[in-house]
Length: 346
Image (cartoon, rainbow, N blue to C red; front, side):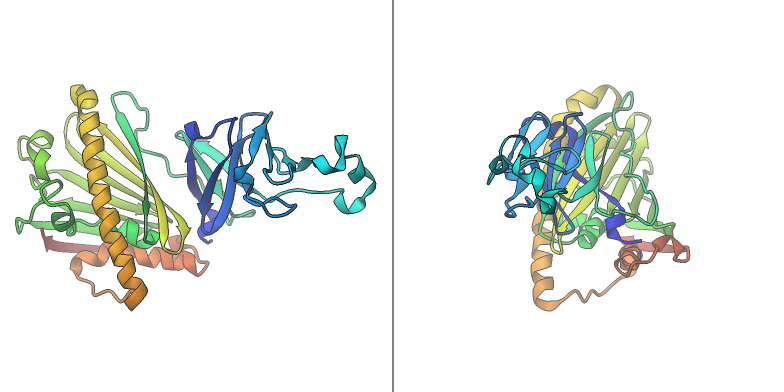
């Protein structure tokens, strides 16, 4: 098992049309995306077989992708179906055995929850499925989607998304403030996932504490990481007060990550009114994380990633152990299950 065995978001379904190809990148692979004649999403290596021009710069004609350089045309299975310089119906190619089979490299594609996913492995260790977005389009739930580029790697991004201590300093007042509030948590590593269940969390949630938890009751808060690149932050404040943040961190290169964030929430009668406020505040928080993670990567490039861990960083250590197994081609689900009780202050 390795990183190429998994499905990665490369586009929103609505952004992939029959009129214009799109480009994407996953784990250093360049992809050209388009909808074929049957309207299904197609992912080709973003390189024309002829002179290596970017296919994503081409045009779509009747469900086929034409290269912008010399006009070679590819169908939905990557086959070259027309070469203009060889005349009508490729007349010259018919007598030339060297050109009897021309086919661009293709990648497996599926569409789930209005996302287009690509898998790079031709023969994965097993047939895995994309991570389902919790309550997406479910009755009584609303959703918001955001996309942001982080100048850092997937491991550091996912660790940030499930890290509480940084929120009081990177997102003061918006998310949390320093109150020396003691939190306890159970951190579990099992089956390629890390699940953190927090206790003693009540009101330290920034500007919206009174709206989210007016009674000051203990919040049900669970954070989780799911191999290789998904995090989920789940807050339950009571009836019709639940908020879930699902982040899918797509590795573009070793130090660039494109993050697709789904905010799904149920605030009852407040769903519609809350939408613009949630979008604005969420983007503000993400912008702050983009900046701090960019700074972190600059320091890592200069000094390396020698981290000094505290008890609160058990979460990160477990995540790193799972990703390290994938890095070496092993199955993280075979790691022994571990459970650790931690306490820290915010």
